Length: 180
Image 1: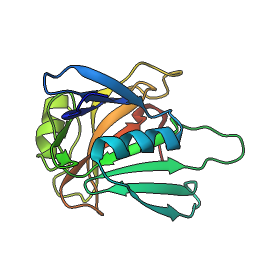
Image 2: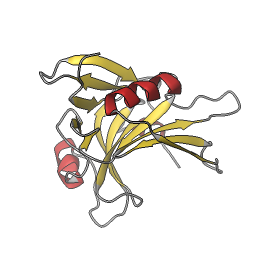
Image 3: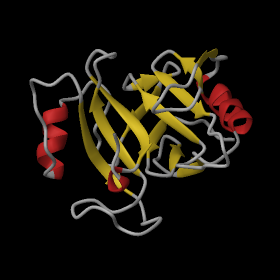
Image 4: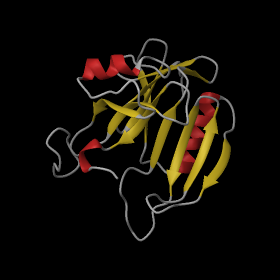
C-alpha cells in the first residue's frame, strides 16, 4: 500500500489518500473488525489500546480500539439484529499517526468550529449545548424514508460531545431513522 497522508471520512468508508489526493483504498465500516483494525494499525504505525464497554438499556456491548486522536467502535449486536454498519469511527484530532490529516469532504477537521459546519450545511446548532450533532455528508438511501428532513442513509457527522474537548468527526450515523 502507498503512503497514506490524508483520510477523508465518508458515510460508508474512510477514503485513504496519498499526497496527490488520489484515493489509494477505501476502508468500509462493514469490514470485519480484525481487517479494519489491522489496516488502521498499519496506517497509523502503532497498536491500539483495547477496552470493552458493557451494554445498557439503549445500546449493545462495545469493544473500543483507541489510538491517539482516533477510535474504532465495534458494537456487539445481539438477537440477530443488525441496526447499522459493522463499525463506527470517531476522530478526535485533525492529524493522526504523526502526519495523516483527517477531514470531511468540506474540509472540516476535528477541533474546527462546529457552528461553521452547521451554517454551511443549514443544520441546527446550539452553541450553549454540550452535545450537537451536525450532518456533514449523507450516503445513498438504505431503506424507506421515515423523517421529512433526513433520508434513511449513513452519514458523516461533526459533533461536540460532552466527553470530548472541542469538535470531533463521527461516522456512520443515520439521522433518518430517529434515535432515543
